Image (cartoon, rainbow, N blue to C red; front, side, top):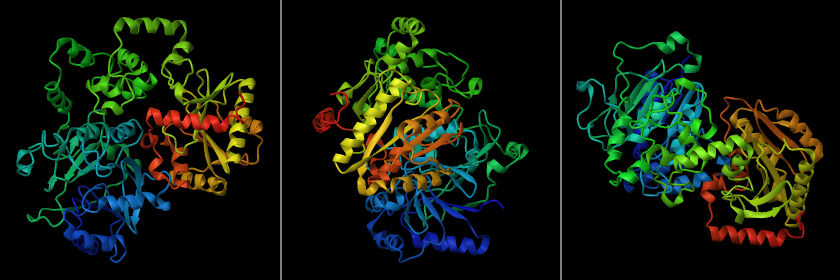
Length: 604
């Protein structure tokens, strides 16, 4: 039987009224499996705080599993901060951080399975206020863009703000009055919906109920239905709760997926990117030379490749290929890829500007075409040498951050991790470009073992044990073996917490017990055949945990770090970008580590 889902608009802390309505709906048309809330979930006034707190503290019962993305309002920061510190929420949790019994916070952006349905979400609102909670950033948007490249159909997409242009091509008499203005509209959400193509899109924030006619999607056979929901207890008595019972797309036949109701319209987002470009054009520099520099990749001036979309394909720029091929509606631009490989910011190439400002670590100026052609000729003559120049980790690269390096050998070097999880979080990296520490010749492996042994001895001297882990991508990025020390008293829990995190992601580690380092790495190499990506963990007792990553598997890039951040009770440090240090702080840490490590350094 298809799952039965309740949808709700801005709750505004009015949980008594919400759950009274839910109980009534359950009696008349239930039972329902879950409640998904969009728009502001927390109170908008201190008057509702006590009512809201009663549910958080368990004095009042939440009758149905409830998921929310509106992580802002009165008292939100205190509740959410407490949730991030809860040991039960440690590690990688895309299916919601538990606030209390039956209440889950969908943080940031992500996708998870709910009773067989594929649910994607974008938490918070678009704002430049820099709040800790209640906002989303470019990284959250990029993560959802990546989801659009994965196989399978997203059943439900949740956003707080409405997508700009959703009423385009809709029947005028069905559009509620007062929603044609841009307040509460978000162009980023519109772009995301056009890429993700969910079967249902649910939003709040505008305070009105709107059920748009289904619309067809570009390059997809299924339709999308949009619902805008009013706020709980609104004075106009507009509908704030709505029920749906969708069959999961993964279980539907092709004919069922293809079905289009008679009132289906064209996509409202066909012209949305052109509208955004017109708005941004007003902000462009008037100087013609600057205009050429900033807008060289405007497709209205320069159309290249097979794609017919206005924006650049990130997959093509980052890897040189795109699984969609000619069906991709983003541009596969060889010149833009050259610029990207030279360290130019993707947003700068794609939009002509970058909103991250000084926090962005990429270039905001373009390499001239003559230099690009020269680089192409050089790369054809010496491909590996140029890869080294473009790579952030190759020691010969001008992009390498040499101030992070603590020790250099013949084949490997050791460096402080960028945005370290702990002060002595190190990386062991090949000097030359190599996709894996497992793919190197025997003399290199011997030196790697010496580095590992030295770090182990150093950590033991500090009362700690080292956890090594590596993600080997079949796409051939520069290898980096991460080394994170943990207190000896916590080391015994590492295997269990990794196994638990794996179970939450739907897989089990293969275990190689009590192996000597050299023998264990031989067994790892047998699993690293280039057909699959591989993740492995090396525990202090020599045990190896390994997982071969399937082609379409949604494996978190920072999985190892996220798990250890949970073990160390520092979930806020799971993302290295939350731990970025100033140049002065990095130099200070490196010098302190060098002084303590010198008696163990194999290269001293």
